[in-house]
Length: 167
Length: 151
Image (cartoon, rainbow over all chains, first blue to last red):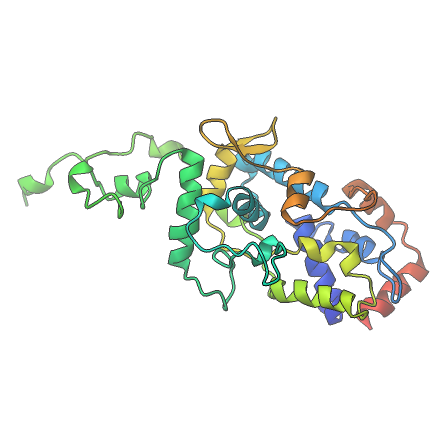
């Protein structure tokens, strides 16, 4: 269905899809039509939905079921929440204010974990400066740079330790 | 040929799990955000600018949708599993090992992060209600959708 939309329609469908975290196309067409129907040319949207509550509930549900279903569609929200509430633990520069001193939206604080061609950060920097500090917060210690499973596969023991930073 | 003595040793730190009981299926491919090609930052700015200069003819900005259109990010599966391991469903929060709240996953915490403070009551999204409404869309509503978004 999406291929038939004009650009504006496709953009709104993309936004709806991101909020809804669609996993299958089972209900996609029906729900999308209803959510699109609030828009009319020249008029404000007829309904304002509580997207945040929906997203919070979906994240909760997907975490509860993650072990069995292994479905998670809100990585972007989780990363931004971690950055917003624990920003002092990350080493990369964060721009919280604009040039006039007003608070900037979280999406403009940094592009380190954005999947974008124009991000100045490499994937390595993403791992090193965001994944590693976040993992440190989550497990309480600075984790090795390669996982325990990989070390076991490589049969690395403490004797093979090169230094704390690398391993 | 006889195995050289140097190779005939037990592995160091062998996995202590029985591999027969490990699931062979890797479903981590389902842990990902939806692939959307749009540059979200540009879309956000464009939507806001359209609203400010009066050219937002569909009322998109005021519908609040662009606020939740966050940028695509690199998905790192291990850390998603770690967030999950630290998630406390009763508190609806991701916790540190010392039981400090790292961040809550609630309506308020998400809206606070996005600096969105709704000035009016918002309509809850219910999949059941939406599916119900979808079966009741009239022909004129479908025509309206067709002319607005498809033609």
